[in-house]
Length: 145
Image 1 (tube, helix red, strand yellow):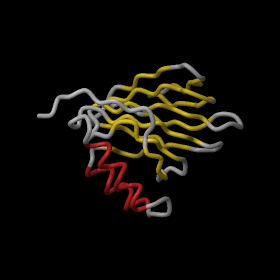
Image 2 (cartoon, rainbow, N blue to C red):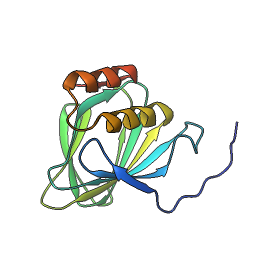
Image 3 (cartoon, rainbow, N blue to C red):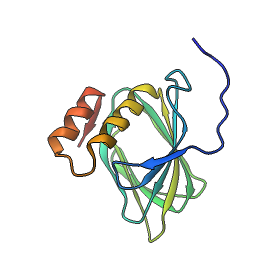
């Protein structure tokens, strides 16, 4: 296994199936599946629907703007500098709060399964049916609620 340090200063920006942009800072391929690190750029009114990961833990680090997070049965506001840890199995969702674009650094651990999920979801696009999205989610241990 290739266990060498990796360096990244700016990722490759691409569209997101959630309507914003993402900068892949470290791909799961670069980290042998250990971590998927993405900077999410979430314009006003961006929403990541409530879902549960069965296989991954996540860490959100709010870099700019404000977000509202659903964490289990709580709703919290995250602002610049806040770091939120989400263990696997916890219901969660995130959306921008206020009138400004938010930037959130998202660590997914382990990363391989989630990166594959995200790539497939991005390929089918925003207008895909709920059934298509649910099928891909189920294949990757991710349930939308």
